[in-house]
Length: 385
Image (cartoon, rainbow, N blue to C red; front, side, top):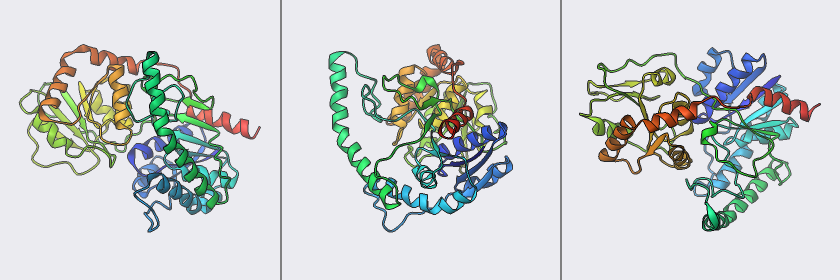
C-alpha cells in the first residue's frame, strides 16, 4: 500500500506522523512523509521517503487576527502546493494530520481516500460534553447538564462560522463547500485520556499514542541517589516560557535530581544536581519518579505510558484540556500559574503520595487498541472493494 502521510513540522504533530510511517514500513507498506525539512534526515535514516510540505510560509494575505480564516485558507493553499508531488507518487491512501487539513483537501482533489490522524484525544464537539478546551468534566445531574448545554450554545456560533470559512476555502480550490470529512479517524491517545461520549463516531478508532524519539543519544543522569525528576519544556509556541528557570529555582535544596530533556540548546551553568540536553525520553523515563511538563499530548502520553506521574504546567492550545483530563484521572497535578512555591509543593506531593504513581500505572495498563495500519487497510478496502 502506497501511503502519503502529511503533517506539519511541529514536534507534536511530526513525531506521531513519523511513528506511523515506521508502523507502515514494518507492515511492508510504502509510506512517504510530507513535512518540514527539519525532520528529513531522521526520517530518511529510518527508511522513510520524504517530501517537503509546501505552502507553510506565511502569506501577505493571511489574517493573523482570524484563526479560522487563516487555518482554512492556508489548508486550501497547501493542498494546491502539494498537489503535484502528491499526484506524482500515486498514493492509494493519504493520512493527514488533524491540523494539516491541506493534506485531506489534496487527497479529495485527487479522488484518493484519506484518513485523519489526531495525535491527541478526539476533539470533535459532542452533544453530551462541555466544549473542548474548557477543561471541564462532563456535567452531572440536571444542573451540570444544563451548564454544558449553555456552554455548547455559546460556542455554536463560532463553530458555524468556522464551517462557513472552511466551505469558502474548499470552493476556492474546486471542492464542494460541504466537507464530507475523512474516511476514518486515527485517535492516537491513551484511553485514560479519552472522555466517554454517546455520539462517538463509528469511523473513529483509538490506536494508542504514536511515539517516536528524535535521537538515539542517552542523556547523562545527575550524580547522587535522590529521586529523578524529568523536565520537558513545551515544544509548542503556546507553551509556558521560562519553565526551566522556574523548576530549578523551585527544586533547589529539595534533594531531588533534575534531568531536562529538550530539543533546543541546553542552558549553561546548571547546578550539580541537574543535567540538560537532547536524549531519548523513553530511556530517561525508566529512571524518573516524576515528570514536569507543559501538558502537550506527546509528553503526557509518553509519561503515562511509562507509568510516571506528571506535574503539568499548561500553556495555551489544548494543554489546559489535557492537563485537566490527566488530573481527573489521578496521575497529574496542575500548576497554573507557575511559581516556586507551587512547583515545589506539587513535586513533593507526587513523590510522597503513592496515589499518583498508582494512577499513572493504571493509565499505562494494557487495554484494547486498534492497529492503525489495519484500520487504514480496512478503510482502503471499504472505499475500493
